[in-house]
Image (cartoon, rainbow, N blue to C red):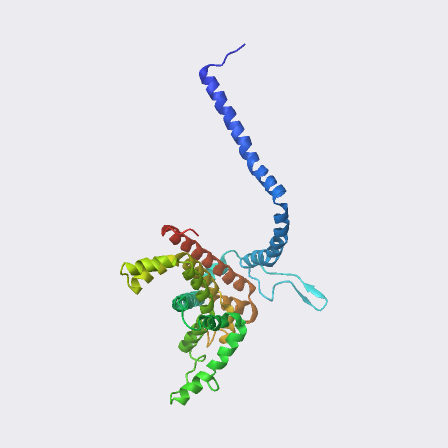
Length: 337
């Protein structure tokens, strides 16, 4: 009977360990999935319809849009029906040509520049005003509940109703704003007919719509800060600005990072305000990326589905890059997100 040498025994033991480790490793994931399904089958059954619906509503259009962005699809070469006749699709695969044309073209860069300016302006002003109102409403003042309800009202009104109301206010001839100006002896302002004023106008409307969300979120964050911190700081002689800087802002950091991210994504894709208020005009002055993508697909002739899909994919990529960069900055600052 052969006896293994010490070196052979060590090698065999190591081999057995690796083999057992591999078998456990390969079977661990499958076993965990089976245990999860058997233990939480009810939760999986409840989630499954939502996953299917999201896959149909979001997944298929996303995949279809990405595919069309690599083609030259327009309304003239896609599959369509004319009466009883079925015309097959004749569009072709063009690779990255659409992306190269979009990124190197002046239209995309100009629209992107205004979209970034629009987003930064709206988010900054909305955050500033929301924070100021949240601080005011966090104090014990008379009629605080009434003021809260009044300031949340723009959030409760459907967005398209609010935009149409503002469009009436901005009307150059019959609008209330110009009537007030004429009442004090000033000339009316072409709010929506001048490129510069139109940009200020759409920013003002979007800020008005966004303040309630920002205020409510920040107010909740303020109420979660222990009052003892302010009392201790005041006893130590800290002024109002010092308390705001060293207690309020650090206490709101987690809430602020979330609302800023959400507000940035919403504003970047804020289709209703631009479309219903100015339709991107005058000219292309207020056109943002998402409204331009809509215009390619529904307004120009022939409708350019490939270009619209390309712009949509680029919007998605830009927002994903921003979210990844934002998360990295937060991690460097010690925030978990």
